[in-house]
Image 1: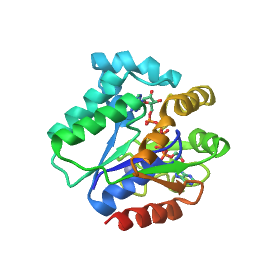
Image 2 (image 1 turned 90 degrees about the vertical axis):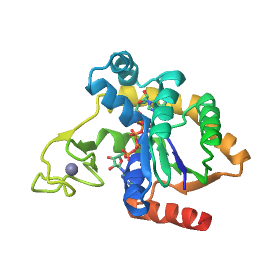
Image 3 (image 1 turned 120 degrees about the vertical axis):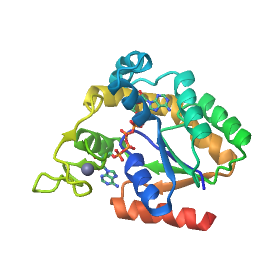
Image 4 (image 1 turned 45 degrees about the vertical axis):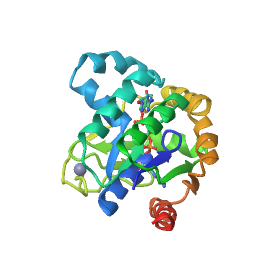
Length: 216
Ligand code: AP5
Ligand code: ZN
């Protein structure tokens, strides 16, 4: 099963992708995580994209399509959860072509709808476990009182460089201008399912499950 999670920054794509990995044995492909890994390891590409990411702008199609191609060609998995990809029409066309090449089928595009006000609260309150990547939120999913990650026991938590109000404003603008046209693109293909992302994490998960089980 191959799924795309589509939604603005802070919609909960990463949170739900990690859950789907555990629940369904699918593999999460997050271009945001891949780009952050590249910058942390100091590769040439990582250095080039760092400033672009911190400003909240989109990295070039060429770079992210290259990253996804590498992963799809190298992996053996029962299916993928695309998290934060595609983000432009060019990326969607490239994914379409890649899936045709590998004979894979796109089962569902889940659009996670959340209003801007909630997105700001979610993004400015986010912290991620440095050990295992579990995502926390000061308001809605606080780090346990003993300061240890509930998943791995780690005690180091990171806040992202682009999780400030100024970068977020730019990320939202990019989303509405370049990514939201994908809603119509996938609707026209009959692949789009809309989920109310404003609900609690478990309720969002249940709605996604209902969509995917209907596709079963
Ligand atoms: P990326 O890493 O993809 O970031 P994003 O799209 O801005 O999404 P986020 O990771 O911020 O949010 P999310 O939807 O995953 O939410 P999360 O689950 O963490 O991209 C970063 C940058 O990389 C881009 O700006 C761009 O520069 C570059 N890039 C990446 N992909 C690219 C591409 N394809 N093309 C070009 N450039 C690309 O949740 C957020 C918070 O809310 C957490 O604290 C969480 O605990 C909380 N939360 C989650 N769900 C709920 C809920 N239901 N109720 C309450 N709180 C919740
Ligand atoms: Zn952890």
